[in-house]
Length: 70
Image (cartoon, rainbow, N blue to C red; front, side, top):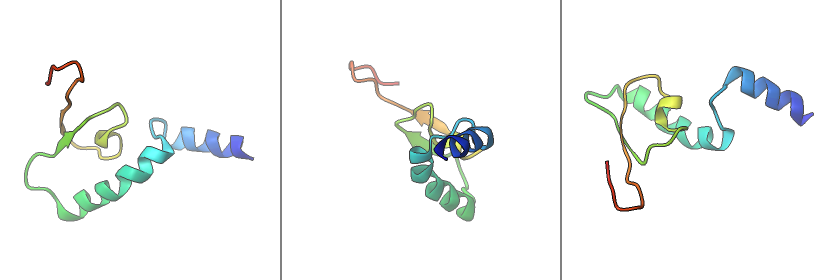
C-alpha cells in the first residue's frame, strides 16, 4: 500500500520530502498570513529549503564548514 501513496506524493509534490515539508509548511503559512513587507532571509539554505514550499523570492545565506562563508 505504501508504494501507491509514495507514487501519488511524488507526482503531486515532486520536490517535496515529507519530513522536511512538515517542518516548513507552518512557516510558509505564517509568512502568507502576515504578508511580508520586505525581503525574506533564509539562513542555512538547502536544496529542499523554503523556496520549495513558498513560491516567492527568498535571499539565502549559508556557511560552509571549511571556514568560507557566503
